[in-house]
Length: 282
Ligand SMILES: Nc1ncnc2c1ncn2[C@@H]1O[C@H](COP(=O)(O)OP(=O)(O)OP(=O)(O)O)[C@@H](O)[C@H]1O
Image 1 (cartoon, rainbow, N blue to C red):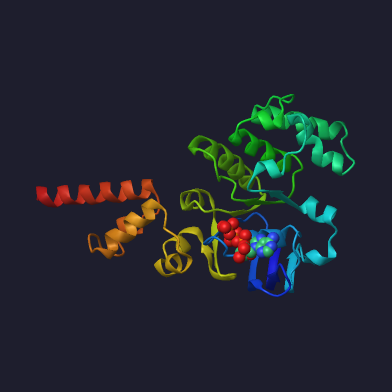
Image 2: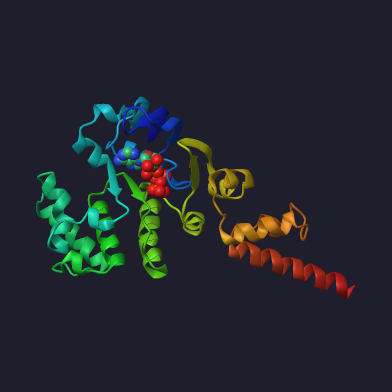
């Protein structure tokens, strides 16, 4: 469980970047942090992994303030994926990269090597390949794999899909969805509202260092006021359903006006077309 209690934070001790931020993320949650550039999302992630300490308030991991946790204790609880995999990758082979975390903890034993082999198999990596010669999407997957091989209960992902094409993005997000399905707590910063809509259970919207919305994904993404305050465009299907209701094309409470996904919109339109046909036939 991760809890922010009235957290304020600053890089220079003067200019506040986060102001009085509070939220609680229970085990197993999948939360996306959204907001404009400079809102304070990455700063929030740095507070979770202990790279930054609050100037006031508390960041608690399993009820223990990060100020009381050693870096190694924090690293065991929270795996952190940087936006740019090249900031993370440092070894000369894929296998060594996956073993790096175990070596750092002094436990590169047979069990660790077996976990690395399983990860190589799962991702279809070439264990001897040189990481920097891999393409961007595969380097991102390697950076992700090198975190999840350590099996942290929480993973923090700072814009995990930036710079990836559609297929690479889906591959990375499917791995993350699988982690979430297996009970790992997932906390990600994401600028792509389609990805947020497809994967996150909950959205926390930040603007100017303050939380302006915290709720179920579509409750937040359908809130025009929140979208305006955070300068975000909703996912396409949400935009279509909101506009249908706003333009009076369908009733505000109709299934088409409430559709969050393509499937829901297709069902709503098919049902409406069926009803029209029946009315016309009478
Ligand atoms: N290392 C740092 N030193 C000083 N100021 C910083 C540092 N990192 C970020 N900031 C400032 O803190 C503010 C919030 O930055 P942060 O990176 O948390 O925002 P963000 O919401 O993640 O934005 P983006 O989406 O662009 O990554 C910005 O004004 C930024 O310039």
